[in-house]
Image (cartoon, rainbow, N blue to C red; front, side, top):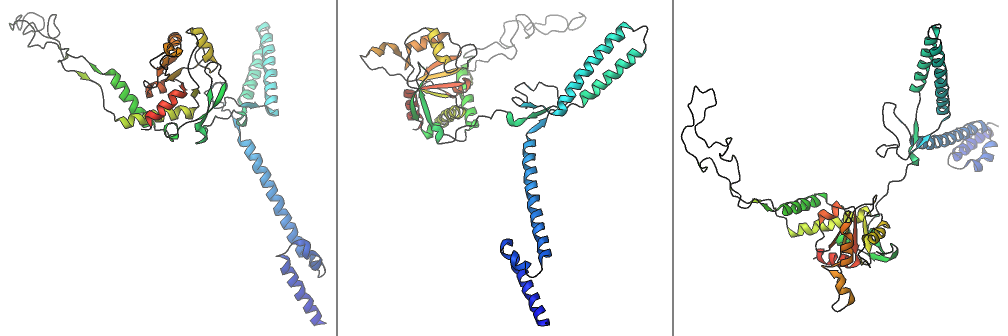
Length: 402
């Protein structure tokens, strides 16, 4: 009998060991036949408890993620959340039940304070308790105002526009200049329009070089007379002492009328120009074009031919691109129009630019029209948008990729 009991215990222990490595569904009938249900039920209940705890943790973590987007407006900050400079611009205010109750209490308190003030004003001489009641109500309203919490949901803010990654960014639409509709697509050169990252230091060097070149050379030949060159005697003007006035040795000092000029130009040419290698200048052009494409401010058009020289017509055409007008942005328009000899368009092209476009843009102060040879880094950074015709794109790519 003892052998049978010992064998039963060994089988039960072996079954319990197998249960740790197999599923509970397979081992449950075997374990129940040897009377170990209590132990294994504890294990199963423990596993069930751990699973439920994990589900609760996942639930609370998701709730924490949702609540992390809700931010409280600090009461010590005095700014309008509707301003664009505010971090809460575009976010919706969270109307909680507590917030509604606080606003309702505030309105009721203001109404009660107004009623108490009216009563106190009427009975100010006869009723001395009115002032105390009004003061108590006003203090309660102030306390409630201090406890108010204004919450904003940052998840409702508009998404910040992101730049299109390369090389997809180089595939741009071609717009019709007159109608503003898309007429095709064009693939830009990666060497000219795909510089990543954009070198701001190169742009700064090119802009400084360009501004210094425009300043150029000044004061060529300007020269003033020194104290030894001004006409006048070296005789002492007056006595050294006794006159009650400042001493003077001669009549040619710089602070006297007809005297010399102090620290004047000496005839030297003031040269402000600096040197910058041609390769660096071309690199600056490539990075400026890449920056315009990265910002989304590059517009490629099929051509820039205008049918009329009227400024009003050109202004209406540019309004389709949100350019010019009272609220439009500035724009730099670069073209490389080439008229064939003997053709009808020869009279409408001068200096690589359409004549009607050049004349019509004369009265638009937000527009600048130029040929691709005159295109430079300073103008591209100064104006918001950059318009390039297909001829100008081909010419720039051929010139900057040498």
